Amino acid sequence: MCFKPDPKVCAEFFKSDAVFVATVVSERTVLDKGGFIDGWWYRLNIHKTFRGARQKTVDVYTGNDSGRLRLEVGHEYLLFAKKYRGRLQITGCGNSGLMSKKKEKLQNIEQIKKTTSGSIEGHVASHPSWIGVAGIQVITKGEGNIYTTVTDQDGWFRMIVPPGNTVSRSNLLWFLHLTSATTTQTSS
Image 1: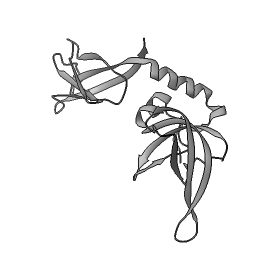
Image 2: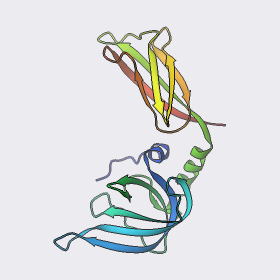
Image 3: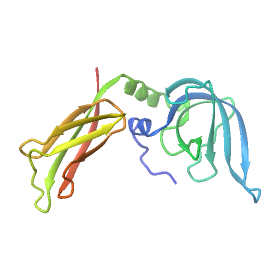
């Protein structure tokens, strides 16, 4: 079962191991021990890679469950794939689909590739009063780098980071609570 609404393109992009446009060249049905369909393997020729999958041909799997994404041989797709148990897997939950219906999603991806920075903003407050605390160091780790900032007099912080996956924390979270954090992306 898929959760609705679909994730934002930028969120799914950074959580995916591979994002690409490709045409299906073959399909192979996978049966379980009882002879029931377990899923499908698809071989694809990649036309454009946005993330991961640098080879010209790739194999992806979709399980026979409520989140499956069935592909048709000869059709072109925009796919967001994740590695699972050593294989690239696709689902019908999210922004993957027939390329002819995903032009706007492709434009969103092109915009991500032009993005030069993003911001992380938040508020650090003490419990139980939830009053902002000044001077608390906030650390963000991502893409092999570490970024730091300090909360202002009201407990708010903002830092500019490169686009990608990041994790933020305070060095004193044992008595503080991060009440909000928003990631936005800006273009040059």
